[in-house]
Amino acid sequence: MPAKDIYHDCVKNALIKDGWKITHDPLSLKIGKKDIFIDLAAEKLLAAEKQGKKIAVGIKSFIGISEVEDLKNALGQYILYEKILLRLESKRILCLAITDIVFIKIFREEIGKMLLDDNTLKLIVFDSEQEVITKWIN
Image (cartoon, rainbow, N blue to C red):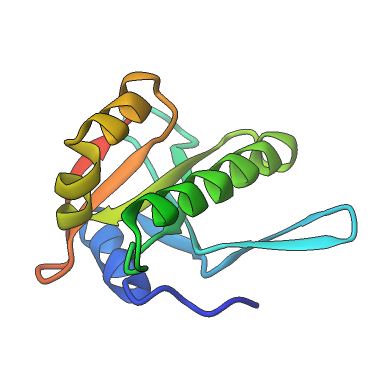
């Protein structure tokens, strides 16, 4: 099992504060002979629905030497996880959790805006000090 991201517990607490129930920590999936671990899985019951909403969350700290390298790695992992979820748990939506600082540094710039404009990623933006979600971007 891979090591937890430095913001793992922060994101977990933020999701709980936002009304989500953590169902897997981590979410373990098997594709062929390979084991895949997505940081968290959660669900939230919605008043108008009986089943609710299910998400899987990949958490990325973006603390490497290059923000572009971190973005490439996060995007590659996101695409892989999304394909696996479509095959194994198609009702679960994949989200990438990033700090509000990373959002400002990358996703308010042209490179990040391009990914958001194309609906390439679904983001959970969180405040790491307050441990709260500040934005959901679908």
